[in-house]
Amino acid sequence: METRKLGNSNLHITPVGFGAWAIGGSGWEFAWGSQNDNDSIAAIHRALELGVNWIDTAAVYGLGHSEEVVGRALKEWRGSKPYVFTKCGLRGNAKGEVQKVLSAESIRGEVEDSLRRLSIDVIDLYQIHWPPDPDSDALEEAWSTLANLKREGKVHWIGVSNFSVQQLRRAQAIAPVTSLQPRYSLVRREVEDEILPFCLAEDIGVIVYSPMASGLLTGAMTRERAMKLPKDDWRRNHPDFTEPNLSRNLALVDRLREIGKRYNRSAGEVAIAWTLRHPAVTGAIVGARNAQQAEGVMRAGELRLTNEEVNEIETFFAEAAA
Image 1 (cartoon, helix red, strand yellow):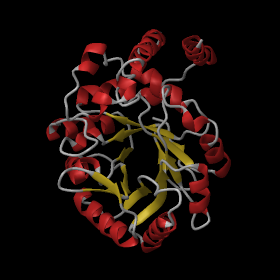
Image 2 (cartoon, rainbow, N blue to C red):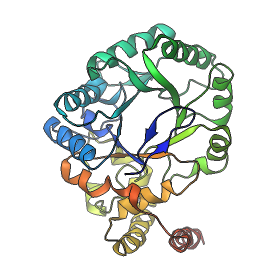
Image 3 (cartoon, helix red, strand yellow):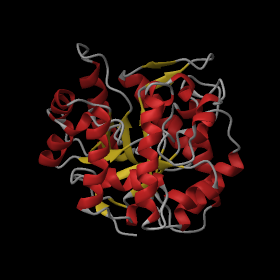
Image 4 (cartoon, rainbow, N blue to C red):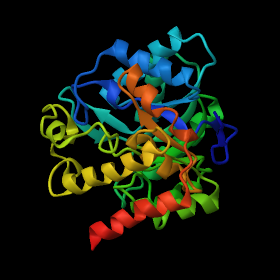
């Protein structure tokens, strides 16, 4: 599988990386429902077998459980070790409620906890998960702390997630930003106007999350399945999974499925390939909850959409907006 250089780092990552959000399981505010750990490990191993060379997780996923599962998977893996990316700045309480905590003391505690759960000596890419409130100076404290952790050798490279252009500029005034992790998919395109062009101009690598819109664009989501999502699945009441947006989104999936048939690929792979066609995007985070799901999406980085197919997708949106 080809690799792409991530921003100003020496990391060369595959176009698709394994996303470990869902494998954190239930018991916290943004869970995807219950999850079998053995299935999760099998999914990670299958992704690595297919050539994926990076895993993206976070301390808050499952309130630490995702990192523990990734650590187990790495211990049992006998091949080349993948890069490990994780995040800080979101803390959960006993009720599973999540809040932003970006003090230096908290981040230093988080990095040690992440290293222990992952059973690794250094984190390849450490990221601020969400920025503080716009008027807060916590951004400067948090980013300075990450820069210090890099100098100390706790982490190799540092990045951010969900930052605006203004927040990226504030961080860059302190230390270079290696990467940005924004939400980006066919149904969530807010970053196209300002953020992606800025990152391209500033040599900030972009690894997008939810390229399949949290499972919506996989081709496996149906109206019936969306209505029956478990109560502990955060998607249950999300606007993308409920009307009036659900009907439009499922019609989009039909269009993606038609394009995918030309390559013997799934709708989800087409959705991922669409994000990767943007020149600012280095890689896409793709989740899988078992080996079969990993088999179906982890080769999406090899798919190249033609200009005609991209125009076909854009025509869908133009017609839907008319």
